[in-house]
Length: 187
Ligand code: FEO
Image (cartoon, rainbow, N blue to C red; front, side, top):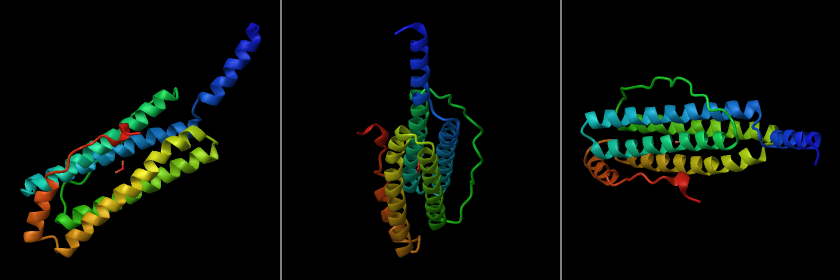
């Protein structure tokens, strides 16, 4: 291959490998959204600590760790694809809530919003014919189904016990045992 052919070959390779601007922006925005989720759940954890509900606080702290791992998964993917990670300021989060049920209603609402964001990035990846990003996002599509199901189950249980009394005591004890497992590293 002469020099010109090598140049053309490499340019073509680059155009295949590089992330399109629109996809890159969506992925960078999602790093921010995941960090914002982490910050929100840490705030909820602090709220529960203040109420003496250490099991619920632990559940939220694990949730916070999960969100950080999601942000890093996007961070690593952008770097792997030769894109530039650009970190933006993280939006503030509420610090006060109206009881346990309110916290979990807001958590479910938040996860539904995140599901919408993931679907939107998938739409962009499809529109840009970026098959690698579609494959990468599949993990998050599945993860969101699980996240929404977990929060819905917890919320249903809380509603059954009206968010108070002995049931809360039992649930608080149960949630103490939740530990963070980095699912982003699983195959
Ligand atoms: Fe990163 Fe809870 O979704």
